[in-house]
Amino acid sequence: MILVSACLLGHKVKYDGGENGQPLLLRYAARGQFLPVCPESAAKLPVPRPPVELQGGTGEAVLAGRAVVRDTEGADRTAAFRRGAKSVLAVAKRYQAQIAILKENSPSCGVHQVYDGTFCRRKIDGQGVAAAQLAAAGLRLYSEKDLTEELLLALLAEDQAADERLVDRKSVV
Ligand code: SF4
Image (cartoon, rainbow, N blue to C red; front, side, top):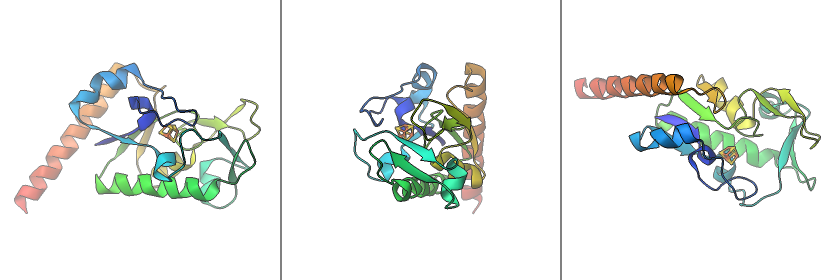
């Protein structure tokens, strides 16, 4: 299975109650190889909720306890974001997922860039909290901005081959 940010598959889980449905992913969703995940929903954060940004560092620093997650009202959401990241990692392990396609710039899911913590729409290089957790566990991450149809088809084929190897191994045992 390929982990995909649920909002990219049209789930209305964004902080403002919306979604980020991505046409290419939606076109291939019927193949049944995408596993929708939303770290913030997994942490039981409500929809809608105030937007948050990472302050003092990116996702890796949040996991290491060197940065925090704060919303526009000043509430500290660090614990919830770490919890959500762990939940998504547990799902990845359960399904032996090797690949994740995640929403760029999100404080949870951002793959290449996140907002800088000032709520001024400025971006910095680095990953969101859940993305950093998955990357540390060895998953290969892509954002929706990396995707071409050619790349997505290659990822789907790779995922299918990995699943077939798993089934073969189980039938030998
Ligand atoms: Fe989408 Fe990730 Fe934000 Fe959930 S946490 S709404 S999946 S970007």
